[in-house]
Every structure is written in structure tokens, then in C-alpha cells.
Amino acid sequence: MPDNDIRLLSCDGGGVRGLSSLMILQNLMFTIDPDSPPKPCDYFDMIYGHQ
Image (cartoon, rainbow, N blue to C red; front, side, top):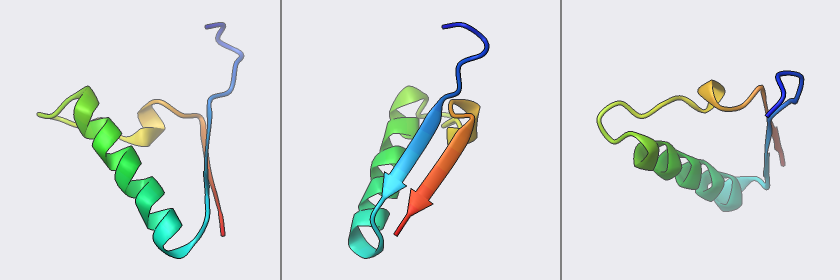
């Protein structure tokens, strides 16, 4: 991937939908490295949430 690409994570929905998005992201980070899960900011340049 070229260096000038922007990696954007967009989480939509508030309440339970927003919480479930965060839980899925947490499980994904844990799957990448269970001993030391990375932070989402290690993979995404911008993280956006909308309710």
C-alpha cells in the first residue's frame, strides 16, 4: 500500500450498536496478538464515530 493512503475506521450507531462495534474491534485486536493486543491507532490513521 502506498504511503499516501489514509486508513479510516468508521463506526456508526449509538447505544448497543456502537458498543457492539467497539467489542468487535476489541476482539479483532486481541485476535491479532493475544499477548499484547495492538491499539486501533496502530492500524488506522483516522477513527470516526457517529451516533
